[in-house]
Length: 278
Image: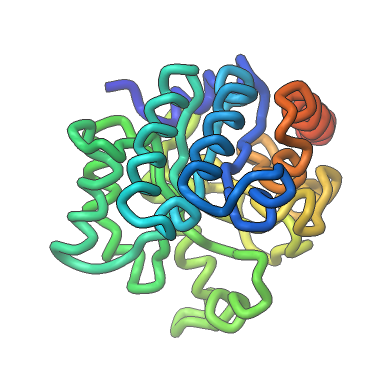
């Protein structure tokens, strides 16, 4: 199967460098005039898919906002994933899973095995039980052409206490994560399948991202405070690998489909201008 890195590289070339989240939290449902229930969830998700599924490179459903409705919410997530695939978008499921042994293997099977109803192109994962604990995810992703985006430098202020702590060899915890993911992508061309999550709000990272060789997901744009211009400060010479991610900035334009498309086009153009100026 073709690698996720190759598919992502082609999708960005064809549709532009944009990832849009599907984050149906109660405030957004209310803003759209929808009830905070499974019917509202389904209408919200279908509207986003219909408006953007054939337009943006990557769509990123946030699993927690579906899971909170139990089995019916997960069924809507499965349907949303299927609809996005039919529309031609790559699906990045934001689950931030991380565990050890048979449990992380089960997570890998749930999201990265084509036989699963939750099968997606890529997932987010937490490395804080050790990057090596995610090996089953990496292995299944490689086998089936999937991708894994590993948390490295996140936007939340609490993250720095762990991510910027120093290890015995003097590197930060985040830099060890960066370096290990870089090793997984060695030799990949034009883009590796294993990426990092680096918040767009964090400013100059003080970390070396130049050798990652895979995509750099940049959440925190729009409503969370960062703008497209901030990508230069955060990523510097690594801008070519950046996948900007917006959620509320685009979703708040709904429920009108044309307004959603206009919002996505606007932020995509802003990001294109920044990334092209690298």
